[in-house]
Length: 547
Image 1: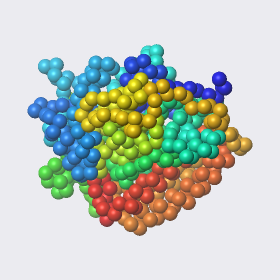
Image 2: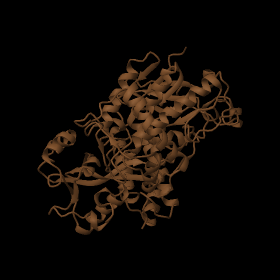
Image 3: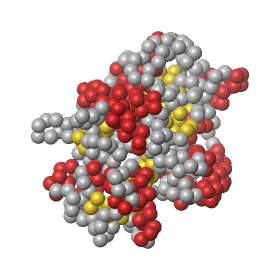
Image 4: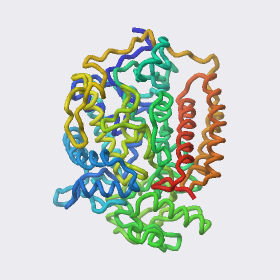
């Protein structure tokens, strides 16, 4: 086998809750999995940074109540089938995977029962959590299970460059007459600079979100729209891209956003106030006040900042939450705040809205299938329709868990049974060969048809140029495609981003690949996808707000 060739039964790109769940379910079924992440450690993901918790089931709760809350938060734009799947299967997935298979130490009360929190948009407490580092606890548990699994290969420090599609990359030009399919991906090994051909029977994108296309974001450095851009170039359908959720409360210091301050803080009683300590959310959302849906809270803060000419507002924990509760429930937030001279148990906490979650993405069905054959999408990179126009708090981790499991089950069905099998569960239907043309025995694509990477003659790209271009697109997106959008702002954004992409594409073609250069190319394409969708939708709905 050539040294630039990898063969993977299933290639999963991304190691957060969605990708890790898919990998674990497949591996447990005896299917070899290669899990790829651009980070130095597989734990590096959006999931690891998630604070608040994951939806479970509360007292006197029901799937019907959860579905109503999801639809309300999603501004009536949710897929009914997807909402039913999440509401019906979610609690079982949490029990089976996060309490049994890869146990997470969720917080419990003195009686041993799960401690359930209330968050914005929820009609009752149903959020299970591990203090204020739930995502970290979940991610560590899943990765530990994968690291010891004989059917899993973990590749860290590898950046996906592009998806391999026979009609685009293959030497056989007659492939353009066949159904569009994905047969793997080009992967850059960051340490060596070598680009590998990873051929796979099935490929799963689990690359997370795109917050880094904005100037202010709660997302980690790698959340720059890689999976979205790669899938778009491969011809996958993308929907709901105008719906970018801005989290209302990101910690603000000296002009910079530094980290998320969980919605669980407001769920515990904290209020949004001005420097004088006076709350203001009752003026914007009398029914919900500080626990209104995130788009409402974020825009309310935005208006208060503009009307008063201030740089930020504040969260007041000290007045509304007992000190002992602050120390026990929010230790991570307190520790990170103390690094900037703010003690959340005694000081007002400076906050501003920041880009947080992408509600749109690659269109996928109830099993995570995209419109490109053998390509699946799970987690934030995908759009199942669960979130509609605005995500309900703590729904993202649950969606990644449920659809990660479902995608795995579907791939297992195709590999072992050719897809002609009844897959149970809410929202399921009989899978036929019309839906799943693949036979039970799936071969690797002919590696001779997929050329090795053609390396650029010039050296590595100048980091200063990459940084400048990234800064330019972040400013464009923040100023013109942010919390409040107008026709003129969006028109300017589209023009400037197209010109920037043209320059970046020329730059990309002439330079040796680096992770940052790949990310820049993907970020500008993701930004254009979002800006075009925002331009096309002239109606304010959910987190897409046009004046």
